[in-house]
Image 1 (spheres, helix red, strand yellow):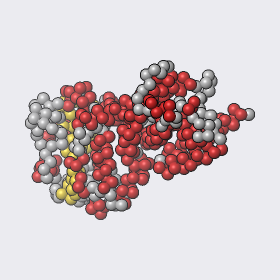
Image 2 (image 1 turned 180 degrees about the vertical axis):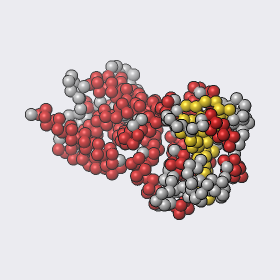
Image 3 (image 1 turned 90 degrees about the vertical axis):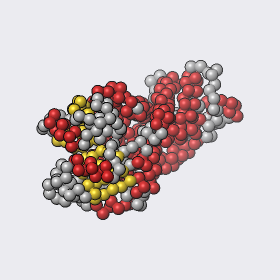
Length: 448
């Protein structure tokens, strides 16, 4: 939610656009409020994912042997011994000295697990199911509400509506009379009751609007429809997405880095992974490690393991600043480095998205970045609570309390805005048509 929609007493009778915007703001806020609350809370938690995991799982996160790091082959062997029936999918080498390595496994029964190994002596320290942890739960809930693709669509829809909330809220905030100018940017502390809640809502929305819009815009590239079905294919088709030299690796059965890792930088989500020589894997993990060391990458890489003939080793780094991202594809049959890409190889749109994602996640400039992104998360919580409070206080008994039914001229304004919205955010536009249909049907029933 954004600045107050409760300024009806100040709305000129002939201001049709104002009335249309207010009605829009009302419905957007009421529909998205619970989801925005979930996204704000889970986003705030994930901003501090490393700190929370260190606090809750120190026995798994820190290596008792200190700064020693063995080659990855020994770590994988130890995990295979501890989980003999499991399939080993990936190893994440320590991001820095004193940290543990993570091995991703698929047990014979039960969900996938992350196993933590002391890299100094290959001791298996324990494991967990990622989504059973506070950070893992928040991560998945933030992206899909734990509902898979359906939840992803809901999150995208809510993000689009939140964009509308901010824009309409700023419009409603703009003073209508000269007498309103005095407290345009500061609170009127003489107000009490509902008017004081309105002041809190109005100023919180005003001072958080830019950062909330930033969170929305930088989060949408990960959405299935807007990001996966629009921005990703368009940027790649224009040569402004993943490195263009990777295109020749594509075929109908090509895997992507997401297929092999389960996750990847946004730029490489749709980039095809090269095929290797069909046949047995003759290259050990330690030999792959040595190749990566020769490429200047000794720690902090994430390496997917071949699962079937023709699969290759794929490794990438995902540092706090995207300029340090590197991706390597190594033939498992003969150890040939068959693909290498860095940030400089990305297209213009991909670079912008990666910078945005790093800032969105609070990674780019450390603690200050985390605190900066925490501010809009807290602001959204305040806006939701204060907005619902305002609605409940002004709502007539037994009524939804929506703004008055629009006249024909106002409906034309709303139709025009809806058309624009559908072009920018198709899901939001379609959903608003549904809301308007239900609203008009309800109005028709009540008028009978």
